[in-house]
Amino acid sequence: MVDNIQFEAVKTALRQSKDGYSLSLVIHPDDIPDELVKDFVGSRYVVVMVRLDDEDKPMVREKETPGAHAVKMAAVLCRDMEFWSWVNNAWDLSITTEESCKKWLCEYLGIESRAELKTDAAARGLFETLRNGFYDWRGQDEK
Image (cartoon, rainbow, N blue to C red):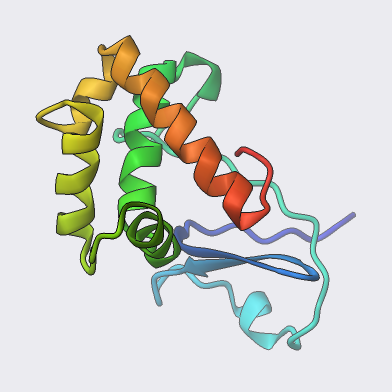
C-alpha cells in the first residue's frame, strides 16, 4: 500500500526558470503533515491537486467561462512586475503599483472595471491580444 499525505494549501507564487516552474504553496501550521516536514529537501512526489471553489467544493474548470478566465488573468497581470516593465517600455509609462496598472489597463481596454471582461467581447479580445504580446515578449507560450 502506498502512503499518501493530504493537506490544503494556497498558491502564493509561480516562477519560471531554465529548469521549469517553481510553485510556492502556503500550508496552515495546523494542516501541515508531519511526513512532509520530516522528508528531506529534494524528495520527489506525485502531486494531485484539486482547486476548491468559494464553498470549499472541488471546482470544475470546464464550467469557467472565457470572460471569467480573462478577469482572473487581468488580475494576475496587474500584480506582475514584469508585466509593468513591459507596459512601461512599450507605452513609455511609469507603472509602479498594482493599482496604477489596473487603472491603465482599464483605460487601455476602454472599460471601467476588469469585471467587464466577463461580458465585453471586444475588450476581452483586445486584452487577449495584449496578454499574448506580453507572453511573446517574455518568451512564454500562452497559458
